[in-house]
Amino acid sequence: MNKYTQLLFCAATALSCTLLDSCRTVPITGRTQFIMSSASEENALGLQAFTQERQQHGQSTNATYNAVLKRCASALIAVADEDSFDWQVSVLNSKEQNAFCAPGGKIGVYSGIMDLMNNEAELAFVVAHEIGHAIARHYGERTAWNSVVQAGGEVLKNIDPNSTASALYGPAAQLGITLPFSRRNEYEADEIGMILMARAGYNPNAAIEFWSRFSGGNASSGSMLSGLMRTHPKDADRINAMKEILPRAQEEYAKAATKRGYGSSF
Image (cartoon, rainbow, N blue to C red; front, side, top):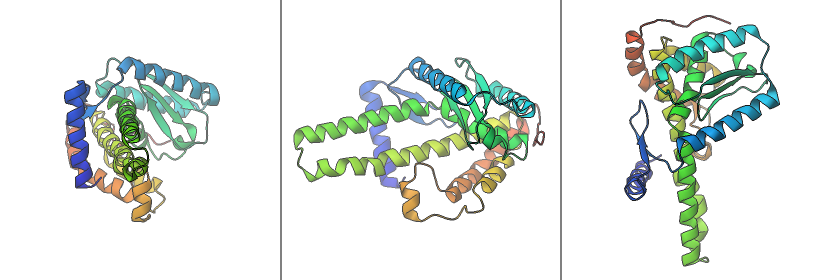
């Protein structure tokens, strides 16, 4: 997100908050965000999605994976400071290399990404990143901004449906707001995740080590255009951002009551 888009985004956020009284502060980062939905609405959708995923894939029977995830998630939940969530945790039997934390604290980690882990601390980062999305309420925030973008397009169409501005509004909004905003969510989830894993006693260096390996050694690949069009940051940008967060995460790690380090290998 360039500086002009950032200014536009901040101004739009401030205006929306003033007019609609729909703002909250993101935990850990302190960023002001615009949300129109209620937490209970988001949590209900999160439970529905989580239930569907468990029905589709089923619970993994890998006893080691289940035990490690339960231990890791319990440590992270203890420092997430989100008592309103009804936390649930599952290793899902799928080769998909991914994980999620649906609104309301429904954590699902696919066995495919568990296969990639060198140690418990790497798992802690992945799970903490997904928890970051949930406690930051990124789903509700993105839904709110999508509504604003759609409403803006309708206004332009009503004023002059044949105008150049109306024709360009959709692509411009996607490049200037929607995609950069989605990438911003990923950076923020990384930041929250590194802080949470450190507070839970996991060595935050594992976050960078995991992502450097997970990127397949191609962290510097990707053209400027491909990075612009992606909803996720380029790997090199993401790793550099993590390195900037690392000193703060190390301070949190130093203060952690229980030092788990890299945890168990599995």
